[in-house]
Amino acid sequence: MPATVVVGAQWGDEGKGKIVDLLAQKSDLVCRYQGGPNAGHTIVADGETWKLRQLPSGVVSGTTSVIGAGCVVDPEVFLGEIDMLVERGVDPSCVVLSGNAHLIMPWHVTIDQASERRLGKLQIGTTRRGIGPAYADKASRIGIRVQDVLDAKILRQKIEVALAEKNVWLERVYETEGFELEEIWSHYAGYAERLAPFVGDTSLLVDEALRDGKHVLFEGAQATMLDLDHGTYPFVTSSNPIASGAATGIGIGPTRIDRVLGVAKAYVTRVGEGPFPSEIQDERQTRLRELGGEYGTVTGRERRCGWLDLVALRYAVRVNGITSLAVTKLDVLSDFDELPVCVRYRLPDGSETPHFPAHQSDFHHARPVWETLAGWAEPLTDAASLSDLPAAARKYVEFIAHELEVPIELVGVGAERDRVLA
Ligand code: GDP
Ligand code: IMO
Ligand code: MG
Image (cartoon, rainbow, N blue to C red):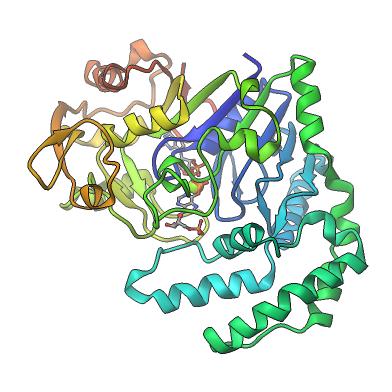
């Protein structure tokens, strides 16, 4: 099965980076199809920890790593991570960047921050990295793309057009300082020389790899419930992490995708604002956060923690066409006597549903219906195969597969690359 999408099935931070890094060992190409430096993927391999925001997780193993047209790129973060590769002995020529990807400009970051401040209590809780404003400009057709940097004249013109509008907004609406054309132009034109060697025709590259029968991984950032169209709007990111986003974001047909591997934690976390039905309401939330090290990679914020939500996961199976699941961080649950799992939502009218509500008010007021499974209260550190797991841990995994009617292909029992049971 040469073309596999790896997609976050919850609200992000499921351990996609770790799973992609593992599968990259046997892949020819790893492609990021959306998002930007709002992602934070931590990978632990051979005792070394990698934290990636902009580059695909394939770089850790030196696998050819594509950043597709559907991504937004902060050149400073991109080049910073390229420098990190060099420092750590990875040849950065494995990275190929689409000329059609959009650039995050300094005003995007300023607007993201100012707009969150203005929203006050209604804020989204974004990563404040300029993601939403960059995608908004792309849709408004005043965005600046990677290929624009390669031509100083075009770049100047595009910055001039953008600033004519942005500076009015910044000064009059957000009451903050605007940007100087000449300053931004010379700063961004200065990136041309360093970016140029990485720019390539990524759609063609992936097409040719698939034609040659190579193994291609498509790596989603963020996750299903943060999808702009199918997530918990407005508490979402501004792109399409769901599996079909791989086709649009890379520039291949949807018929080229062979399988979709959903990545789900054995519990749930969420960073930022927005409804979260299975959020833990007692001291066990703090316990789970500490046990799982649930702090944001990008912002360092505390991740909100909840019990496994099968209603949201069932929805993820549907909207992504998930063909199998990787369940991560099962080891983190070892400390609990019993494990509540949300199997249905109770809606405001008193009815119960196994399906994710289509109407926002139903979702905002949904209450979890729990089924309590037995815990195992023993560490999973020595398990080398699924059969080594304590019976209750195996039952927990089987319960998920049974409820979702999807096979579970991988089970994560530790942060290290090899702590995955197949
Ligand atoms: P991503 O954004 O989906 O790539 O996930 P993050 O990297 O933001 O967060 C997942 C965290 O859990 C990282 O610190 C990983 O090293 C860690 N991790 C991944 N899988 C496992 C696992 O099975 N067990 C444990 N204990 N940690 C894991
Ligand atoms: P990875 O790839 C978890 C959340 C933010 C906020 C919302 C919008 O590591 O799973 P944005 O900056 O994208 O406009 O913020 O989305 N968010 C993430 N949460 N993991 C991520 O990425 C996220 N990227 C964005 O916290 O609620
Ligand atoms: Mg993350």
